[in-house]
Image (cartoon, rainbow, N blue to C red; front, top):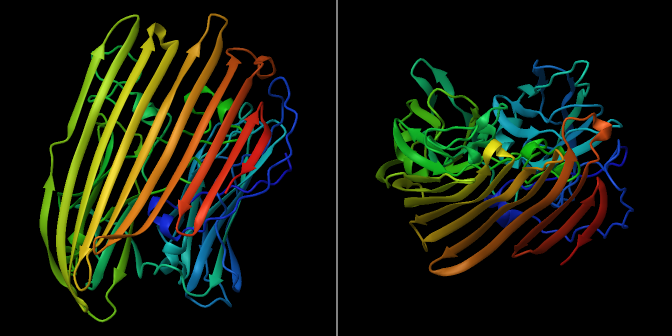
Length: 536
């Protein structure tokens, strides 16, 4: 399909305070929907706002122009742009993709100088072909872009007589001259592989350190649907020793330094029903956002100039089982007036990881899960502007109810994960506190009827709020709510043209903050975009 549709995703809840709140686009003309899916449908689109671009001089650099047919990575080189300086107000990544024929959803990554700047998945194509577009604000990686670097990109793919879709992508970076609204990190680091594991060596004058982990459960096995796994003695096809709870942990020199709830990614073939996702992907499907960990309390330890062991693991994965990928970037802000910033870790306290599952067998089997964890870390740094203390408290909680019948002909889940983080910074001047509350929800079921019709009804929620306080008074509040709902069915075990597939999907994406609001809703019926409505 030749209609060009802009696909964009926000960089994450922690960037809400600096995100442009647009006014949306005019409502689309209602289109007539066919009785069922045909051989063509609307190109993928999302209700998310486009990346805001400053009105300054810009320069564009191509990172990759490649077709993916197998699992051979693309390797190239990057050179900094000419004519836009080496400090930029914004850097925007753009991926244009197209594919036609028949193909599964595929996962991919893009590295520049070893730094992962994009993790993505692909839509499943129509026989007539689709095009899609992803945008991402990558200003935080500006340090990486100032020098010539190697480029590596891979979207692993299989092309044969059955799966004919060749994935064609073109990726660029556009640089905008000027100062960024928020100071970009001075350094962007990756972990080094050593005989003792992965290590990190930070500049000795680091005064803020944030690790980001692009964690995804994937690979086609049960860890792609980790939130549905069950423990013995429950009779279900996807097993895990401790049930569905997963937690992505980061350790420094063997000590727990950060915890986070992984986002329940659903790719475009997910829940056994690609007809849910042909036009509207699930939240974050095309722009997998990293989990973030504020490691500033550990900066005093890390600033000694020596390498320190850094490990990322996923709690809850069955022993010896693969399926998770978790590459790490480390963002560092430096003290420009000190060669060495000394300090110390003053506290690291974790609760016991709570994780209980209750199995109730019957005509409808049921597993109830309640889990959670809490970690508080504190430290200080003696910076050029005085002693600064940082305390990070993170609290995770998960509840889920998983129901299924014999043969899993009915398989349903109602799950909610919350991830609360409070960062308190004290020193010269008023104490500053930033509280970020994230909520991820999955509610739906897949059923197979006696007529061999598979139906999936599913709702997904990606919500976050950020509240900043200074000296006891609130200085900022922002929130985001990205909600998807879909209902699709088709006949199993028949040729594609006999599936008689039908499906509706909706997405509403809302942002509210000090700069205004953004509110856009999309609706599709049998692959036709029937509503595009903007509020605010």
